[in-house]
Length: 71
Image (cartoon, rainbow, N blue to C red; front, side, top):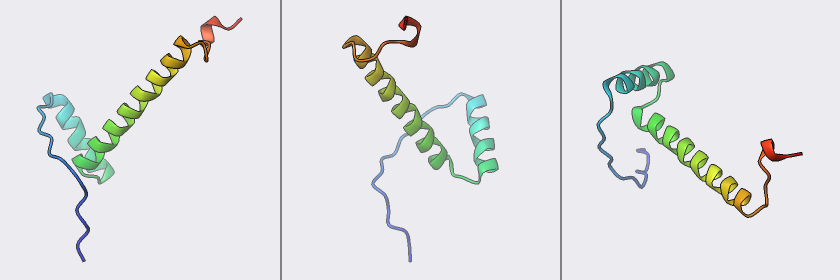
């Protein structure tokens, strides 16, 4: 039985040749497709971005004190 297709969109990008070669090597080493590796990397990057934005918001609202400002 075939796997059900996931909801997806096509993304065409132009990568620096060095990055592309490293991605291909990583995929071969990890036994994963480029799609899987890039999706996971983007998800981690996006999650990190929003985590940082939330921390900045909390700092601006006085809910968090940056470590270097603790007395």
